[in-house]
Picture 1 (cartoon, rainbow, N blue to C red):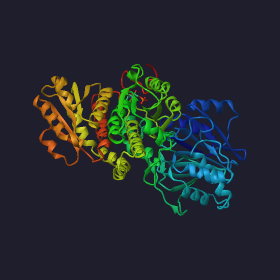
Picture 2: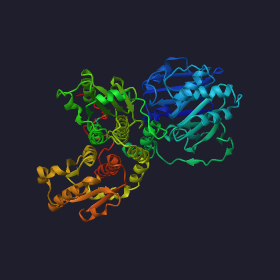
Picture 3: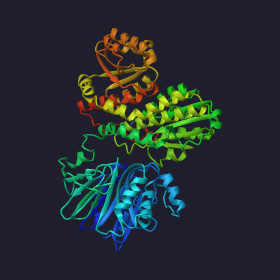
Amino acid sequence: MCGIVGYIGDDRAVPFLLQGLEKLEYRGYDSAGVAIYGGGKINIVKAKGRLSVLAGVLDNNKPLMGTLGIGHTRWATHGAPSDVNSHPHLSENEKFAVVHNGIIENYLSLKEYLGKKGIEFQSETDTEVVAQLLEYYYNGECEGKILDTIAKVMSKVEGSYALGIICEDYPDRIFCVRKDSPLIIGKGDGENYLASDIPAILSRTREIVRIKDKEICVLTKNSMDFYNLDLEPIEKETETIEWDIASAEKGGYPHFMLKEIHEQPDAVRKTVSPRIKDGRIALDEISLTAEKLRNINKIYFIGCGTAYHVGVAAKYTFEKLVRIQTEADVASEFRYREPLLDENTLVLITSQSGETADTLAALREAKKHGSHVISIVNVVGSTIANESDDVIYTWAGPEISVASTKAYSTQLAVMYMIAIYLADLKGAISAEDYDKYMADLQALPEKIEETLRETEKIQYFASKSFNANDMYFIGRNVDYAVSLEASLKLKEISYIHSEAYTGGELKHGPISLIEPGTLVIAFASYGKLFDKMLSNIKEVKARGAVVLGVTTQGRTEIESETDFDFYVPEVSDFMLPSVEVVPFQLFAYYVAAMRGCDIDKPRNLAKSVTVE
Ligand code: AGP
C-alpha cells in the first residue's frame, strides 16, 4: 500500500505535496519522491527513507517552483527500498512521470516486451513499466493522443492501481486513473488535488470526488473531467467530508487495529492472487528444486508471538500435506537450544517487521548449519528478508497497530500456498485435493469477509465478557493454533489474563483453574476432533464454566453443550484459522475498547522488538 498525492493550481506544488504525503505516511514510509513540472520539463526529486529525508533534499536543492506536481510515499512490494526504486518513475525520454499505489501483476511480461523494443529500465519496480508503456504507446500507435494512450495502457496492465500521471506536453493538467486501489479528487478554489486518501487534502478542502474503477480523470486547476476507458465522458457526484483530520488517517475507523482487521480480505487477495497463474500456485520466489526438496527430512517453523502462532498452524498443515516431519518453535528458544540442523533441513521464518532480533538470530543459526531458509515477511528489503535464501512477501501493506492482524492472515495464506506447492512438488497430494485446496484458497477473502459481517454478535459477547479476570481458549490441531492467537490478541490489548490450551491437555492440570463463571472459548471446527472437543466442553461445563463454542456452519449440535455459539464458514480444515481468527481479533478489540485500553499502542509493547 502506498500513498499518492497531486496538486495543480497557482501556488508552488511542493508544500502541498509534502504535507499531503505526511498525512499518508501510515500507508507506507520506506521512500518518497515528487515530480514537478517546471522550465518546460518534468523535474524529479526522490529519496530512500522517511519523508523527512525527501524534505531535506528538497530544502538543499534549488527550490522546485512549479505549480503542477505529483508525489508518492512508498510501501515497497517489487524492488527493495532505494533511491532508484522510489516513485515517481520517469519514462525513458522523460515524457511521462507516474506515481502508483497497487501491484502490476503482469509487469515482468510487459517489461520483457518493452525490453525487446529496446527500452531500458532503471528500477526493479512494477510501476516503471507503466511509465515506459505510456511513452511507448504515446510515441507509437496512439500518435500523441493522451487519453487513447492511457486507455491503451490500462488495457495492457493487470492488477491493482491508482495512478497519478503528468506528461511533458500537458503542463496544465494531471491525469488520474484507478482500478482496485483508492483514489480521490479534491475540489479547491482555483486549484485541485488528487490523493490516495482523504487526510492528504483535508487541510485544503472537504469537497471530494471518488474515482471509481476504470475511470480516468483529467484535472486542471479549474476543472475536472471524468471518462470511462472507452473515453466516454461521465458525470460524478461531489461528496462533503465531515471527518476530523485525526480520524481520517484511520480511514474513518476509530483505531488502526479495527481498520487493519477490515483490510484482511483485500490483504489476503493481494497476497494470493498474483501468485496463482492458470489455476496453479506459482511461487517463483522459492529456489528449492524438486531434487533438493526430496532430501529435506525436517521442517522448522520459527517466529515470535503472532508469527510463531502461524508456525504452529503450519506444523499441522505441512505434516498433513507435505508429509515431512515438522516442528514449530519460538525464535528465542530455538536460537539457544542447539537445534539439529543441516543441509537437509528447511527452516521457514515468519516475521511482519522482518527486524525481530530473536527471529533474525534464529535465521542466522539455521544458515550457519547450511539449512535452506525461506522467510515470510511483510516489509520489503528488511533484514530478515535480505538474509534469507528465499523470501515470500505478504502484501498486507503497513501494519500500524501493535497487535498484528492482517499480517497474521496473510502469513497464514502464504503458508498454505507453500504447503500446497511443496506437497504437489513431492507428489504427496492428489490432483483432486490440489484443486479443492486451490478453490478454497481463492475463496478465502470472501470467507473472511463473511466473518466480518458477524460483528454485532461479537460485540454482544464482548459486552458480556469485558469484566472477566481470566479467559481460556481451547482447541485441538489447527484449532489449538488459533486458540494461541486469539488468546494473545485478548491479553496484549485488554490486559485480561488469558491462556490457550490443547483440549486434551485440560485434564492434566489446567482444569483446576475452572470454577463457576470462568469464561472458556472452545474452538471445535476441526471436523475429525469435533466429538473430542464436545467432551472437553462438557468437562469445563461440569465445573461451572461459561462456554462460547466456535464451529463450522451447520454443526448445531454444539448448542446443546454451550452458552453461546459462533459459526464460521466451511473451508479446507487446515485453513480454519483464517476464518476463526477474525471474530476473535474483533472480540479482543471490543473488550479492550470497553475497558478503555489504548488499543493501537498497548502498555509495555512495541510494534517491532529489535532487541533480545
Ligand atoms: C502480535 O500481535 C505482537 N505484536 C507480537 O507478538 C509480534 O507478533 C511479535 O513481536 C513478532 O513480530 P514480527 O512478526 O514483526 O517478527
